[in-house]
Image 1 (cartoon, rainbow, N blue to C red):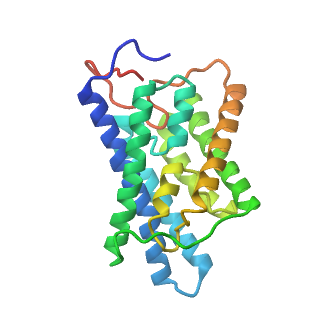
Image 2: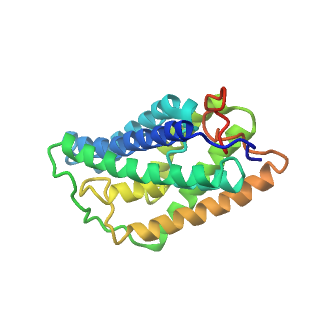
Image 3: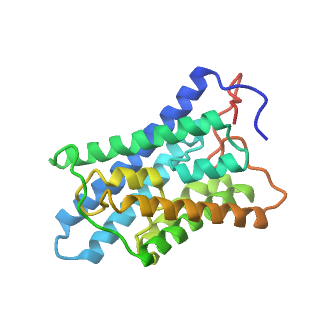
Length: 249
């Protein structure tokens, strides 16, 4: 259940800022490592993907550990919306989280482009549009949420950053789409015409598939853990709570 308290403006600011910063670093990690991989291994697509996956997994673990104690390190609208369904976060906080994640993803994409001497915004021309890719996004998002909520609801929250990083690193290779599994980062990737980009025309179908995967995951989690309620705002890493920091979540 949600806390009976109400988020103070300062507390909600801290939490949404953590989501903004965390998602920005995650997106910059995805795009930046993709650009670097192509430059380091221009003739080996497999090695490029391996480098991109390893860097993304590492950044994800580090960022979750860094901002998780503040916001729970959702870094993903699919995670936030699932937590909302489980009444682990209040609607006003969920809306703020999703907005912060979208802005963070856009910022991370721009920063990644600039770090590698590209234009701040270069809309991707990479078309990713087919039934197998959409199915892959359903599977990738389903698996991500299952890992997150399964680890947390089984009382192993401290392992969540490593479990999530390992899952995403593996999902780069076992899903046909290379596991975007994140609506905010998907949107951010449209702003970079590089190895990890996705054309703006392809992104809506990817995001729709991610929503479907998230909905299926919520149903599965309810079956697997029927008697457990999500901890307040702590889907990935328990956030620091003290004083009035009990938040609508």
